[in-house]
Length: 510
Image 1 (spheres, rainbow, N blue to C red):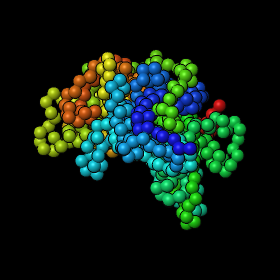
Image 2: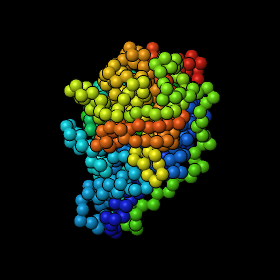
Image 3: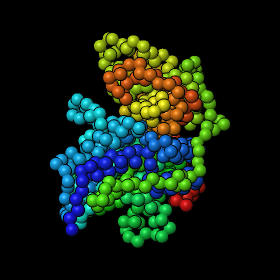
Image 4: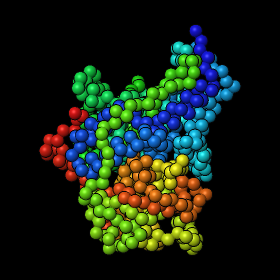
């Protein structure tokens, strides 16, 4: 018997699902992250997980985005062959109308991240359309939808290799994960696609990330196949690398490893790996012709009773009176609570500044970085009584190529971003006796609550990429690279990997 699916029901369901996943973590993720928090022995990693858990609960209560990067929309649709559509639009048009409504919803504006003409103009589409979606025709009379939003920090760490048939998948994964840095915001999960063709393997890896996190249950009952044995082995060995939450060193880098396979050519062994970050966002629903989907919010009881607070050893810093001498006194791994005014700027702003210097024009009026701190951020637009929307840090390595220019020409003395810095940036920091501070990726709403005022001071036409001035109160950051060029992202994982190995510290879920 055929089913009629109305355009309005489908569009509304897509829009509702995208709103839903912007502020609700899946319950399985929270459950496993709570376990990771309880057994974490690294103080820095435990603090980062506490921020992520606190942020997650705040977002669930306030219905605001878990992460400032509200992602590019990914959808997987299984359309029953007995389904009839009550619409004059194409499926793509209906999908994109749902995305448009979700991202323009006034009470929870989501940050538009999609740019058109990706090779050249890279102009923001303003409503995050178009989505990336995949359709499978299947027997039946329903439409099954999995919807996800993938941020650039994790998506950009996607890896692919065409192994020889005799090569070890495990060896490749363990060699590759450390090269991904911490910009994908661990602890999260890894999705592996094995087989098919190059593009099929990537699709399998993406689909695998939509599967429930069940590593706790899998270890408890034991593996029943070679594939499950591989999942457990990779889970344990990746965690034994000591990368830890946010790359700060610790016991948990991944909460689960998911694998999907497909038959492949006899001469081939394609393997794709895609991470999901601490802002794991996806939902599943089925339309059967009776109306739009109803998504049940997870109970707040799913969240562990963890509330991040600044530790007694945290050092308060006045950004308005900051000196180079004070910056030079900061120690790697130290927690700072920032107070006062900072400027912001990401890729586009840095490129503008570089072009202005190249033309001899210098900085625009009203912009002065002398003895100031810059925060790499592209915030979500504020709603209701907010000063600014969720404002988590941007992957800092994207600004590495601009670091020498900023430190040499502008008088800048410190930077704030997400995860590690590369060797070029670290050398510039050491040379100029500056510092790099890390804010926790996956704690965007928590961070935004520390921002007490915000105003655009330059490049307003760039939207979220504009230079803002933020005034903050007790904004938590970690000294990730000190004035001597020592990086905790280089030292801490190595130290924790050694501790795990020599002390026999378990990395399995409890």
